[in-house]
Image (tube, rainbow, N blue to C red):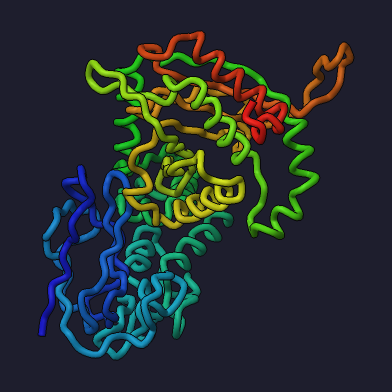
Length: 430
C-alpha cells in the first residue's frame, strides 16, 4: 500500500517553504517517523517524517523547490522499514543515511557497481566538485559515503595544489548551504580557490531565513527613529563573583556561570524602573507590557536567531544560564521552534563573544530597544584617584526615539551599569 508524505501544516504567518536536503532517495528503506527531508521556512527549519515504514517509491519535489502545506513530497510503499532506526545523523547508519537493504536500495556511482554507496546529497556534491568515489573515504555503514565525507575531501583537496578550472563552479542549490552552512562555506571557498589565476565568481541563492533577516533589518532602519546611546561598565565585581563561585555553581546546577545571567537580571530590573523601554508601538498606541520576555540573540549556521526567555523576571541565574545554553545548542542544530522565536519585549545581543569592541545593534521590531554587550578588555581607569587596570566593557542601547526619550534611554543604560558594577544591588533590588 502506498502512502503520501505531505508538507505539514506550516507555522502561523508562514505561507510557503523551500525543500531543503533530502535524507533519502528513491528505493531507500525508511522507518515510520524517520526524518526524510528538511523544509526551510523564513523562520525555522522543519523536519518531515515518513508516514509509514517501507521503501521510498517516488520523490515528487526536488531540493530547492517551493512548496505549500498539503503538497505531496514523496510516496512510500508500506513494508518492512530499515533496521537502522530514526537517527538523522549523516555520518551514521540512521535516518539521514539509511542502510542499504538490497540492490534496489543502493545508490552507486556511475563508474561501476563496485563503487561505494553514496547518499543523494553526497553524490550531488561530488559531481559539483569533480570528485569520484575513489577520492572520498566513506564513514557510513559498509563504507557509505556521506555529505560530511565529501566536504572533508573537498577541504583536503583545497589544501593541495589544484589545477585551474576553465569555467566558474556551477551554482549551488540553497538547500545545501542551509543544512551545513559552515562546511558548505568552506566548500564554496575551496571551489573558488581551486581556479588559481582566474577571476572566478559564484552565485548562491539567498536562503529564506537570510532573506527574512534582510527584510527585518531593513524594516527596522526604515520604520523607526533609531538612536544609540553608549556607556562603559567595570566588570571587576562580576568577574570576582564568578571566580569565587563558578566551581560550586557548576557543580550544583550543572551549568557554567556566565555574564549573560547578570545582564538579563540587570536588564529586567532596569525595565521595571523604565517601563517605556519595555513597551512597543501599535499604530497610534503605545503598548506597555507587564511581563518581561527577553530575547537572546544567538548565532546559528543559518543566520541570527532571537529565541525568547519567557518571564525572565521569574528565572534564577541557573535557569537563565541553562535556558540560554539549551537555546544556543538547538540553534546550532536548527531545532528552534516558532513558539520560541515569537514575542519578546526586549533583546540582548552579545557581540563580545566574537571579539566586537563596539557596535550599534539594530532594533528587533516591534520591540523598542535592544542592549548590545561587547568584549571585555583590560584598560587603565581612574579608580579612587589612582590609575588601575580594570576589565571594561562597552555597552550600547539602541532605542526607538519615537516613544523613548533620550533621558530614559541614558538612565536605563546607567541603571544597568550600576547594577553590574555592584551585583549586590540585584539581590537587594536597590
